[in-house]
Image (cartoon, rainbow, N blue to C red; front, side, top):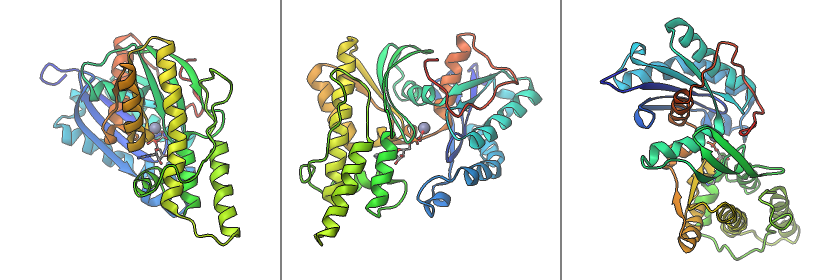
Length: 340
Ligand code: KG4
Ligand code: ZN
């Protein structure tokens, strides 16, 4: 405890960010340290799992100390340790887990394993202090595309998911083909602002009538075919038009399905979570669609959209409040279902 506040440490290492945060009473950020490995993986055009693990190991002690220092506390003030236990890269997850378990064991503090997606959704509680479940959540990240009926802080029903690529993955792949760099999402977002979203008609895949699932491999192939076709014909490609048209096609489907899900379940609130939640087109289109339907949209600030320790601390806090605690057998789960 510190000044009468319940202090949670959140540890996140599921992909390429070594992140630790200190959060008071579940929602107040005291520190948020994120050591990104983007520069390291950039040369490979994507995250290399083994390299990610090594960098987590190298960075985690420094990130841990900095999180405590910036919050102006010591480990003695911490009441709870939350850590991502899955899904994610197994070697990367294990570094955060080993650190969390070691600290919990040495200090006797309680430990709570957190599902990464529950973390992303929980970032919204920090961003919007008045927000409480139930609501509809759209989770869009590099590894996931989910429409989730959030019934309570710890109660989820996944209504739709991608059957192939995650939306962030599709952004990253298209950016690679266009030679934009890594990670592709923010680069496509930026370039698209200079392009015409109606220049090229890429496929919109809605799947079966009423399905809330997604498929993005078709549009990815559509973009590749378009680029190869133009190159073969010797026609110069307008990258900005490709970026804008791709982004438009993806967001048309995402926005339509998310609003449909909210209406089906009579939800008046849609919460956006995950790295692709930073996308300006998504924010704009979903915001307008929500307004038309009398639905309120919640989106975290970009710093809380991408992977961070704050979201894990917040989720851990609500799990602990509900009496959920992990023991030292807590393991890393590369494929962990949210509603298992
Ligand atoms: O949530 P996140 O940080 O990590 C995972 O849990 O996967 O999401 C990373 C993904 C990457 O694919 C990245 O390209 C994408 O989020 N992303 C964006 C934007 N910012 C990040 N995609 C589209 N537009 C953006 N502005
Ligand atoms: Zn994530």
